[in-house]
Length: 191
Image (cartoon, rainbow, N blue to C red):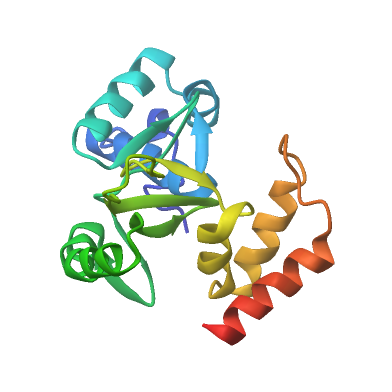
């Protein structure tokens, strides 16, 4: 059975601009990050139209630009089991992050997995003159860094494998896959 998601725009007279925009959003969600020209080819939609949709989705916080690609934005409902909006997660985590930052004297962040990217949702900066910052809305590859390790340690096995496979085609691939996997298992065990 064909759904609106599966049909190209030219096959459905009732296919609205909203449906095409949602199809674009689903394509981004399926791939984690994708360039506008790739979306144009994939969805068989003019590049100018793709950019118009991306601009609108970005204005509402549903899509973020990451270099030359686009990924899901922090305002989107993202779930894996229980659906929690990013805005609610920010609201709930704020007092905890403030306390953590006060007690450690360091920057505290809350991030969430979006595709193969760790996206910062909220940050409480350190009061030190020299500090680490992770701008809300910015993202980084899941296979690198402590934030990615924590997010992947609790991810389903198919997500871990997808990230491991995709990481091997990046400029900074995983050098030792068995050690990387063992690191994720250690994080999951220690909490």
